[in-house]
Length: 132
Image 1 (tube, rainbow, N blue to C red):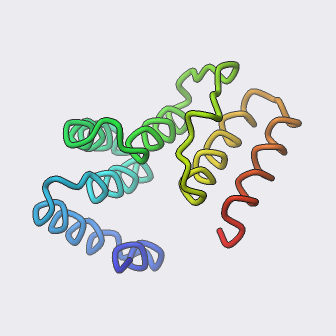
Image 2 (tube, rainbow, N blue to C red; image 1 turned 45 degrees about the vertical axis):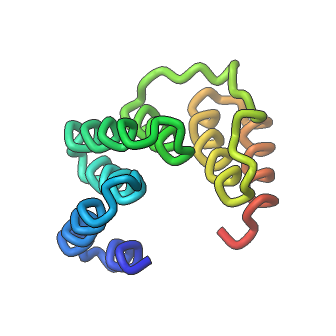
């Protein structure tokens, strides 16, 4: 939580240091690595982003946030994402996580021009996590 707050107030270097420390303290938890990867993606350091995602996959390749960060990376780098095969049943069951998937996919769908489906995904994202 502290790192997210630091990131919001643009103390990025401090945030990176704290996430690095957390990742060392909890080597079996991929979350700190994935949050770090997000920072590097926003700073256009795509190689660091990719390495951190790969390292997180080694820890737990089935973790919901790993898959989500891979989608965010592809979307930010304008890589081709097949929107015809979005399987909503594969989204996590936990409402906040499910909402995150709907938000990311709505952004991806927007690039495809399918506004009806974008609106539907945004509505679902809000319904699963109205406070976000």
